[in-house]
Image 1 (cartoon, rainbow, N blue to C red):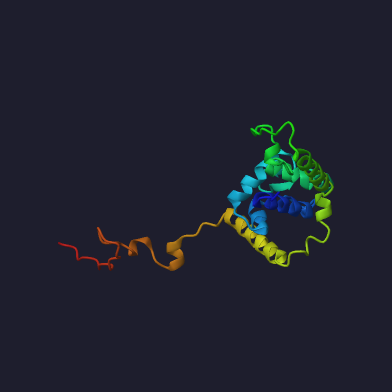
Image 2 (cartoon, helix red, strand yellow; image 1 turned 90 degrees about the vertical axis):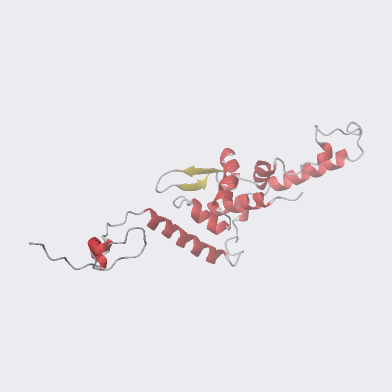
Length: 198
C-alpha cells in the first residue's frame, strides 16, 4: 500500500487546520502556501474532505477553512478511505475481479488478515496524535508560515478600495498638453497659437 501525494497533502491540510484551532478560518491562499501546493490542487483535495465532513468552508470576507470534526475523531483510516477508497484492499480479492481461485484461494485469508490489521492500526492514529511536536518537526514550516502571512496581507490589500487619483494632476501635466499625432503613438509637440486673421 502506497498512499498517493493527494492523501499526504490531505493529511497535512487537516493537521494544519487542527493546529489552527479556534482561530479565524484559514484562507485558501494562505493554506496553499503553507502546504506548498497550488490553489487549484487545494480545491481538488478539499472537495472530498468536505463531503466526508472532515472540514468545512465558510464564505465571506472573513471566510476560509476550518475542521469539521475534532482532531480526536479524525483518524488516518478516515483520510485514507476518503482519498484512496480503502486503507488496504488487494486487487485480487475484489469482487469485480474475474479470478478462478476466488472460492478456494490459498492466499486470500492472508491478504484479508493483513488488510484488517492495517485498518485497525490506522484507526488507532488520530490527528490529535499527529499534533504532538509536529509543528517543530519541519524546519521550513516557519518560512512557509511567513510566506503565507505575506500572501494573506497581499490578498487583503488587493481587495481593499483605492482612493481616486488623477494622474494628470499628479504629474503636473494636463490632458491637452499630451496631444498625439493621428495614426502614430508619438506625442506631438504643442503648437503655438496662430495669429487671428482680420
